[in-house]
Image 1 (cartoon, rainbow, N blue to C red):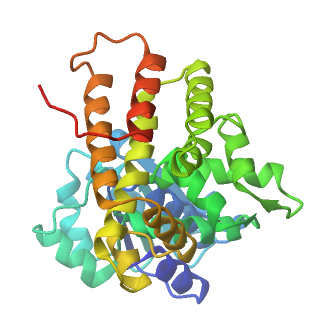
Image 2 (cartoon, rainbow, N blue to C red):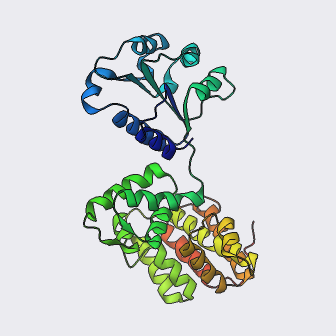
Image 3 (cartoon, helix red, strand yellow):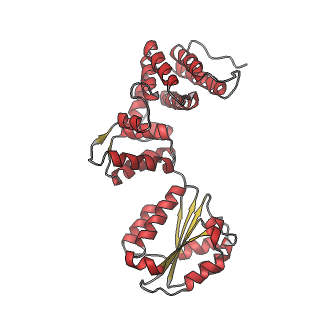
Length: 340
């Protein structure tokens, strides 16, 4: 079951006696919980007939007592157990799950990991309730999620800006969602959101950032590349480690596309875990500018400097010097590094 199915069923007036929201993606569990909290009962009914409990504060006996109470203002009483994974006797809910009270709805929020599917209780949950497993999104699913969520925020964001936000913030939707909320505040007028807006959001210089660095490397302009790299390294809090990670993604995607040769965009999208037409075209353009040998050498140098940034043959303390050295090798990859 998905969160969209959950929302649709509630909107159509269909409810279950039990809802199990479980898995590793805490944000999705919080989103589903909030929806149930706001939509299973009307606002005036919640005061008397909605009970919110926390797993670390309750046991099975107390939860069952709340479920056995009769509703006062609503057709059914709603009991929400947040952080249910912290209940010491969570498994003891098995008998109730097999025969839930018709006058109550139980919502179990089990974060961190899925409920053990080998438990007899899990089979009963599937039979008598609604089970939503919140798993982290796959890489290729993140941009579609971001674009849909941005639309819900009434944000006018283009794919390039969406890709930039993902590259800078990462794939975790628990981190991306607050950034979209910030954008919603500053772009409430519906104005178009560009890559420059994303760069402003995360506090990067518009002129000296990793995207401009990638463009300069791709163009083969040594003066511009070294100028951008030097200025970036002078910024407060600079670290070469995330720069290496972003550049590694840049070159590795180009290498994958190059190795595929003449093929369809669908195959390319699957190979680089992103089916966005914009993203595919951008990586195809990058791949055309390099030979396979050059890409292989660049990836090798990135590997070397990733190790150096973490202490291999480098005592640390001067990320600026490492950055300039690395960019020199990426601009002129005349050899494959020798690993000592």
